[in-house]
Structure formats: structure tokens, C-alpha cells
Image 1 (cartoon, rainbow, N blue to C red):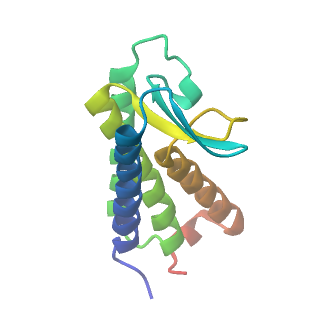
Image 2: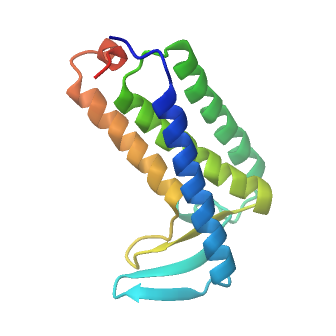
Image 3: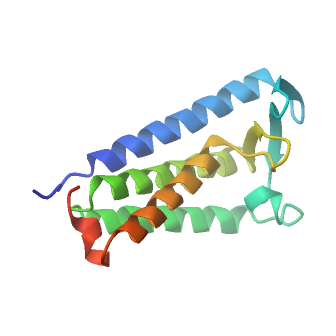
Length: 159
């Protein structure tokens, strides 16, 4: 039986976007910029305003508009692919929902503040946020779904 609904995609997109924006709201109201709240030895909440991309790369340049345009285009491509192929199975919808929610979460930050709010600090890795986590998790889910499939058309089976 084929799944013609994109309910998993919409649900995961909404939940990931909500969690991302809610945690950023809490952090903005709890910490001042570049201050930290120590949780345990290797983890703190640290408010960082990231005007760059991946781990703050290119923060010395004004890349806000190109990043906003790229984010919008990627989001549109993901949504368009799903609309044209509503029979993608649940795991793919969940993976793409995580990616879409993360992209929208960081996009909201860039439009609203001009930078992305990062706050998860594991001390051995650059500070990041839930949107980043959702994007990376979605990419890994897609990667593993691709590895497990025998051919590309198997992503359209309801599993």
C-alpha cells in the first residue's frame, strides 16, 4: 500500500522547527551573548551569534543574502520533490522533514537577526544548535536509507 500523504514530513518539519525556535528563544532570554552556563565537565550552554556558515566559516564576509537565497532554494527543492513524489516512504519523509525544519529554523534566525543563534557547546566541537543537529541527522538518515536500498526506486515503497 502506497503512502500518498506527506503527513510525516509536515509533522517532523513542524516539530523540529518548533523545538529549534523554542530552545533559541529560551537561550536568548537566559544567557547574554558569549556567556556560558556550565552543565557538566564537557558540556555548556553558550550563546554564540554565528554570522558565518558551518562552524562560523566565512563570518568575516557579509554572506547573509547568499545564504538566505541558498536556504530558500534548497527548502523549495525538497518540498517540490516531495510534492511530485508523495509516495516516498516514511523514513525519507522523516529525514527530509528534519532537514527542512532545520533549514527553516536557521533561515528564520538569519532573516530576523542577521546571524544564527548557536548554543550547544561540547567544548571539543564548535558551538551549534538544534537546527544543525536536525539537518545532520536528516542527512545521515537519507544516507543510510540509500545504502540499505537495493535501487533508487525503493525509496518510493511504503515501509
